[in-house]
Image (tube, rainbow, N blue to C red; front, side, top):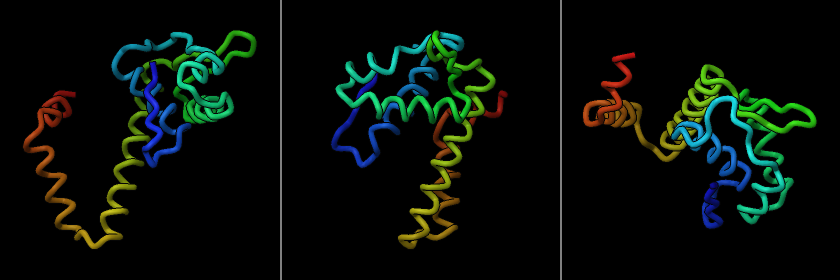
Length: 130
């Protein structure tokens, strides 16, 4: 279900967090669906249960999942999930821009690159249709 890249610089709990959001965005996990238990995800991914618990806690904090004591964790409704994904994407973009600025990439180069992404991808068309 989740792929963990141990050579990645990204902490494992963030990989679990992102993996669950990705599964939701791909439709593998549907809004309202019960997530696998922390122990089963940890066992399947070969990681410590505390690591998965940290990812689940972050997902709950951000509104992507809802935990019901004694019943488990469930994927949030679509509207809430989209807000989480949007927030996560914007934070990633801010981090990338900050990293680029720190190594000397100019504002003009960043803006030109972003504009080129919209010009060559069909995602701009989807965005305009909404």
